[in-house]
Amino acid sequence: MKQTLLQEKYPIFVAEIAKSETTYPTVDALVAYYRERIAENPKVQFIGVFDHYAHTSKIGGPIAEGITAAVDIIFCFGFAIPNPQMLAVRPRSIGIADLGDKFVISFMEAPMQPANEAMEAWTRALRNA
Image 1 (cartoon, one colour):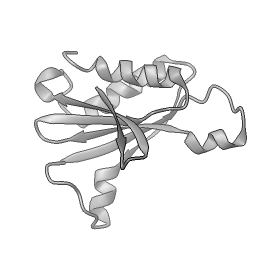
Image 2: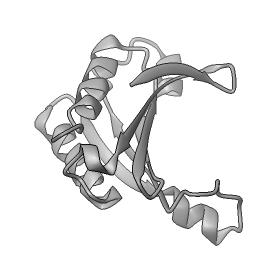
Image 3: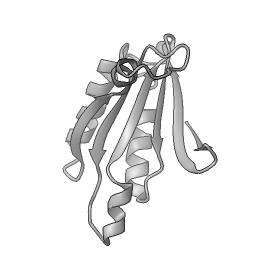
């Protein structure tokens, strides 16, 4: 997993996982996996799954070559609301893109270290799982 800046301003984590490196063969299987991880933590609330590929296809938007599926799993780690501005950085999402022979999994760095640690651990556990 690597940490980088997307468009020179968004701190994100990205993992490229070959399908041969995991027992999860589809985007749906990965969504189920993440939903299980979210459900295991009483401080995390599942919100929904957004099929970004279907939406972008429907409106005729461009989709990068090789992407055959793309979803966002949306959830919240909001342990507290220390100020109203904190709402701007919630909820969280993990993106999953299917590129045929591999998955690209990405998420934005959270302002709360326990959230980053959990999302990294969930994603790292996919290899050879």
